[in-house]
Image 1 (cartoon, each protein chain N blue to C red):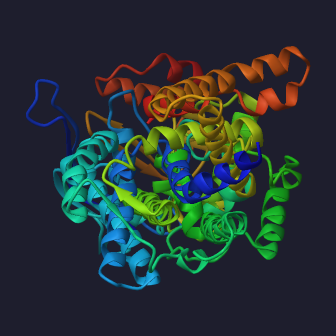
Image 2 (tube, chains in turn brown, cyan):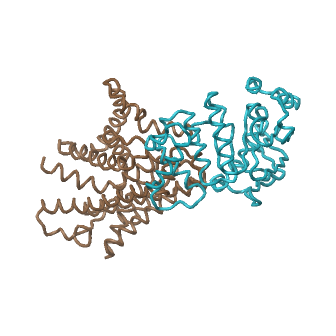
Image 3 (cartoon, chains in turn orange, purple):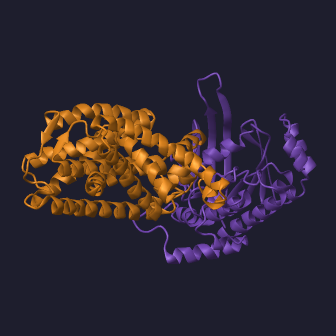
Length: 318
Length: 263
């Protein structure tokens, strides 16, 4: 039990940026961008490559974030230039980036060794202390990142971004260029994935060409778990959105870590992910109705729709 | 203020469903003029709105705003000059965003959006003052998602949003059509007051013969993609709803049931 908490935090905190990024695309833009799977790996691969060549941690991480952001812009470009849906553009990108990431890494998996990562200063410490200091460093990154995204959403540019996802026609009538909003959203989401990848490879000590696979789906699961708890109900309550992302990510990791602790194998985790996602959708769908029948009308009225369903309806309407 | 030069608009060009929506439309609206537009379904009214707003790009001709050629500018790039209110009362606002967020979005229309907080204490106070003028008690509901407001309230808010940032042209696309009679009168009154306060040009598409005659300075009748009747001043005031229906039907396009009932 003692390690359940630390394992959850060490595995979960690096993922906060990418889940925030996925929230931006899935809930605020009401779209799905599979590029994040590739961007997550790319962020990790670039970090490992540059650290291996003796580049400093800040510069390596900056390059990881920038490289991933560029991937998001390429997806935007594919969508706008070829008029293919974002989800398809992202799928093409994620497949293409598998090759790119293997090229960056040079082989399927490389170890970062002991020197030159964000956490190398902690090497000589006792395991318990090291874990908590690792958590402190990760938490610092995650909170600064979430605060920055939260602020961005509250600015005039962020408001325009939130509006394009809800009512693009109205946003255009108010002078918002929705193509630019989409580019911003996808660049930001993939930059987040790159940051998460950079943090993950450094905390686990190796980079793998398959680490990013399933990131989008896991992120959607985390977002929905978070929404069950924090109930942001609309993009105007930015504080609650951040809480939903943080709680959802950690809860999602807790489920996976708990499953491993309970004796399941690492190979079972994909199945657990799928089950968690289905459970989250089901709860999002039926919990409000259950709440209504118990007389908690207020909560139900504010959240009449499940996450996936809401985006599907928005698509039809758009 | 607004000038259309030989505008032609073809929907679905080169396909079996090709239709000429506008043909050789020449129109000039001076600043401050309130123009009402009537015509049966398919006459080209909505296409006219689309071309002026920038939602449709004409296949021929030019659109000028204050002498500037905006023919190739998309709608969001014209938003500084052109404020729109849609026929669907729910279309002009973002339902999941708060009332304050919606107003803040419109408050930055046509200027560069910055990395500064969209809502400040000062702006919130100004929003309350603006909303209080609507007389709907909305000044106490700034934090509510707009989805909780009624259709009439939402169209009033859209009207208010259109009046922010001093547009040069108010584009009203049957914005009263989906409202109940009492709300309709209220929003129409708000429309006229907004037009007078801004001193801008206004182009109002309507299905109500009464509104078309009683409101505004000039009346256009559209049919088969063109302006076929253009009247102002005394002659406009002398029109009767029945007479106007005769004019529309005399042009070969049967008036819709709604127009007959509205008369």
